[in-house]
Length: 279
Ligand code: C2E
Ligand code: MG
Ligand code: MG
Ligand code: MG
Image (cartoon, rainbow, N blue to C red; front, side, top):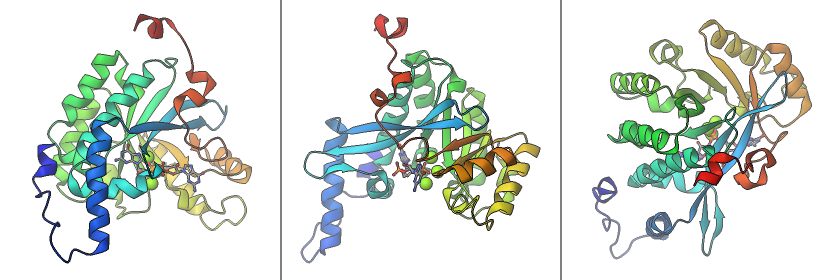
């Protein structure tokens, strides 16, 4: 929270301020209120094992249930939260909440959580992750942290050490949206990822036109050769699934299987097991 104040909260608040700045300012104030009043919630999208079509994990995707604007999607507020530093308390909440919810799920299911650049720069990340795991009694390897490659551009040494530390806790680390940012194959050598998530732009047309097939094939082969698994994002039809199965992609995620929904919408997660009763 101290980080968020560092920028000078009222720095934009002056006569002649344009409408866009006013709207951003309002959104930022709203976000602070939303965080303290519990307006954020997690929706989950299943990750499917390609050969068996069983769900193996769920990705937590944050939503903001705004009192007047309705459900606000992350593309609208994550960038602003990143600029203001609010993404750190928000992201920490996401980690804790995801582990809390996962503690109620069958043990074969994992949860994937997105990390922002500011979170990776914050000093509290390791202890937040440790606490979330310990307090909820979940096995560390059930938590998967997703990082986009653009995060790796600056301060490579710091991030390398941090990723090693995270993996030292036993959590998994995935490279999200692979192929869309300033991709460098050097990252794959320097950073210890467990998984590559192939961005959905490479899934477009797959199985109908073969424009992106060589790229998808090469990424899967590269990941496998380096001991990493692959998840294809944005899978919307069976043509794509046919190719993914043939090419040996491990997991698929997309509207073909489900959009992101509250955990209560997935019957396999609504389990009143002994853990649930104990709370
Ligand atoms: P992402 O991590 O790459 O998440 C996948 C996004 O693609 C999600 O959008 C998901 O709903 C969407 N998607 C999934 N399947 C399909 C499909 O078949 N077709 C299409 N067209 N889209 C699909 P969403 O939920 O709006 O999230 C957008 C981005 O916001 C995420 O991209 C992630 O970068 C960010 N984000 C979400 N939650 C968090 C969070 O808790 N923390 C941080 N730092 N970022 C988050
Ligand atoms: Mg993601
Ligand atoms: Mg992604
Ligand atoms: Mg994305």
